[in-house]
Length: 190
Image (tube, rainbow, N blue to C red; front, side):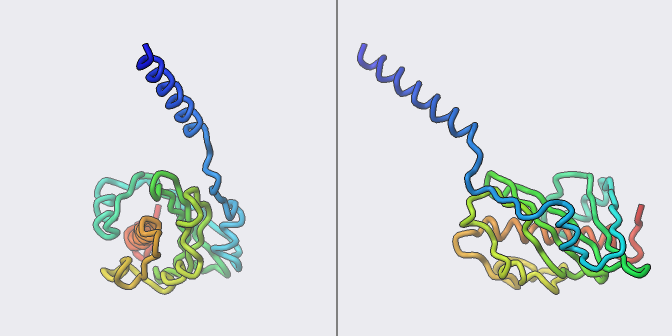
C-alpha cells in the first residue's frame, strides 16, 4: 500500500511539474525591434521599401539548399528591397528558426552586390547567455557566399553558444543563397 501511495505522489508531482513547464514562457525572451524599426535599421536613407514575396519552386529550393548548405523550411519567402533616388540600395531578409528549442529572428541586410552589410538580432527566446553579441555579428559584414563562410573558418565561434553561432551562420548563408538565386541582377524577379 505504501508503494502505491509513493507512486501516486510521484505521478502527481510529475504532472504538476510538467504543467508548470508547459505553460511557462522563457524568462529571458527578448524582442529588440518591431517591424517598422526593422525596416529603418535596414534602410535608414531609403525613399521607399518594397516588399517582394516569392513562392519558390522545387527546383529553386534544391538550388537554394545546395548553395546555402542549409534547409529552407518554407517555400514562401519575403525580401525587402530598399530604394533611394530610383536605385536599389539593398535587400533585407528575415530569418526565423529554432536555436535549440526556442526561436530567434534576425535580419540580414545585403548590398546591391549581394554582400552582407549588417546583421541585426530582432528577437531571441533562448536564454540570453546564448545570445550572439553585436560585435560577433559584425564578422559577417562584407561576406559573400563561399566555402569559408563557416564557423571555425572565416567566422569565429562563440564559446558556450555553438548552436547559436551555427544557427546564425545558416541563416546568413540562406540569405546569401536567396540573393544569388532570386534577387541578383538577371535573376527572375516576380
